[in-house]
Length: 216
Image (cartoon, rainbow, N blue to C red; front, side, top):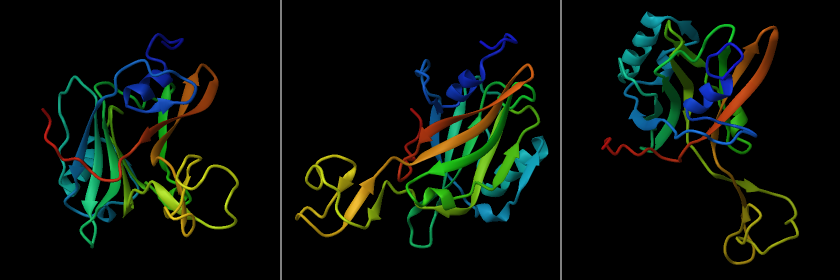
């Protein structure tokens, strides 16, 4: 609990499914759904707040908001690329209580950790409802989720290729080498207690492809 008596900012991030560094996970993750976006995210732009702007954005993308739900849900947003592969294009947060609250926790940007390519991804579209309980982050340029990248330069000393250390070869003692990693979304926020404002962040791993299996 925070000094004000409400949930601590770290608890709010954890309740959204994000892991805060140095803090043990104390609650089960929220329900996560993979959602197919029907229209390009590039039709939206910038940041708009309010119920009307939030609903209009979901309508434009062809996805539905869960109304009057007593549980927190996350929606990972995907769209078909030109070659037929699924591309990641955003995250929908639908909490059962306000999470963006001025003077307690202010949700900022969503960024991506994904090797060298993650820094170029921008979730440059943001919609937030009037209560601060539902947020949409979308990338105007969808991207393929990857978990390895090619590396160049002298081969590091250590275990043989493909036997640990985060590196792998071509299986024949040479050739291409790769670095492996987990792709993670990073949610940035500012936690406020009294006159002190502290940046905090939470991380969430994402898969390389969607699973559209219906809920049980």
